[in-house]
Image (cartoon, rainbow, N blue to C red; front, side, top):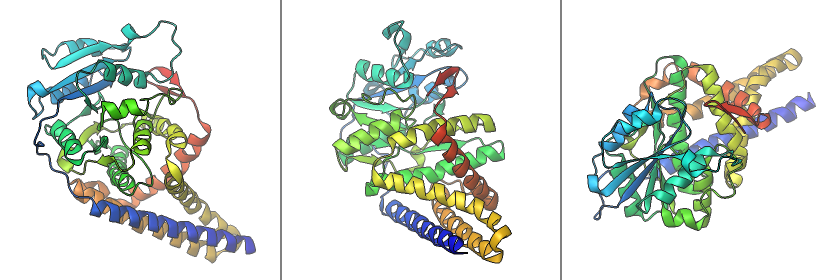
Length: 385
């Protein structure tokens, strides 16, 4: 029984830490003012980078949304950087007859025998080099930006005087329970991203809605030092800028400026994506705050799953502990996700909450463990690590 009581105390401490983490994140979120989408006094000249590989199905929608922005046409350009696509991506992109669009093929700028792991970073690096303007925005070729996206991102960056900005990315078009869960998880991650940047304890972001000044990018050496990691272009760069320019990386808190992306329809695609994200977390986590946050939610999830098994040895006390651990996580998550879904106007994603909570606990425990041991995965026909 002594071992069980020690286990119980550890579990209770984890629960308290988790409750405090969520409470602090909610306070940081509530203190963050909602950003306007109005233009600043000056209209910044903007280059939008869109790296893509085998996105022929998404490009008609994604490029059309970028070329139809509510932003002065002579004040921005869109650069599509094709990453060795084997489908009709280039043909689709070339179908657009718009002077704002430039098309670049990554293969034309790489040595044939170049040993490369991080193709997306190379595509973005090339895009920055060839961009005509000093304010850079990035999004993904499988995403759709809202009409006010450039205006909101560039305007907020200028008004705040930040060196970098990241905006909300949300799921849409949910056709099954798995896609609903991913969309709910995305909404929660956006709140945590904003909170982490606000109180400076961890740096998160999403390359589907990212912006930075060329001078800041050059000051931190761009993606140098991270080319050995195929994923993580967004978090690595934001972490470097946040470290070099403390307090100068912010979050665009505006629901109308949220970029939309399709959620993975299958478990295989979902797990592959999250393992890819997980492999970068151990390298991209910034400071003790990120390590603590990731560790607390991972360990708490595993304790929730394992504690019911202890009833075989200690009986009712294990069930009581299980109820306390699960209750602490459920109440905290409901508060966090309730606020996130209210702000982003997607409260339907919460139902049924018990199912979403169960999937989240299993996902955090399982993918978290796999990401510690899996170092190679397949992405769009490439075997990377």
